[in-house]
Length: 134
Image 1 (cartoon, rainbow, N blue to C red):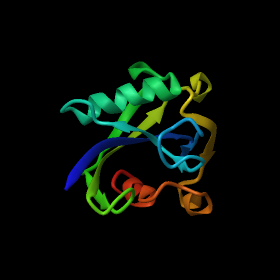
Image 2 (cartoon, one colour):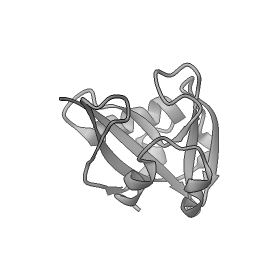
Image 3 (tube, helix red, strand yellow):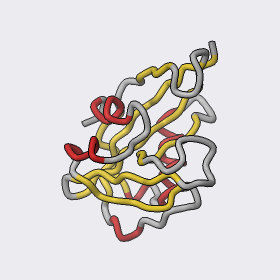
Image 4 (cartoon, helix red, strand yellow):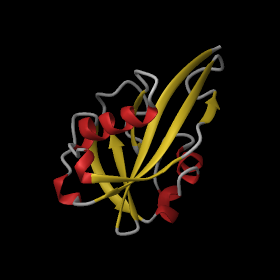
């Protein structure tokens, strides 16, 4: 069994969360909506969350405030039955959303009411991951 560890961060502003539409250039789940995500490259999920936010939105640590770090959640069967995806969730408040600049990993962004998440074609497990921090 393979365990892939990833971080997923949700950015909050004015009671809305930011969702990002994954581009055709990413390795998986193209065209689906997600939070800010990336593989855990070291042993510190929070540090990786800050890195992914900086890379994908251009927001630095001074532009966001950590609200909550949730317990990880495991998913199996997303890409294969022999791979477990371990997701470390985070929730951050954004100070100035006008500073967001998306990188190549995403084609579009939207601020939505968290209750409306099910109205979008989201990556598998996103609602459960959000519940860990919301």
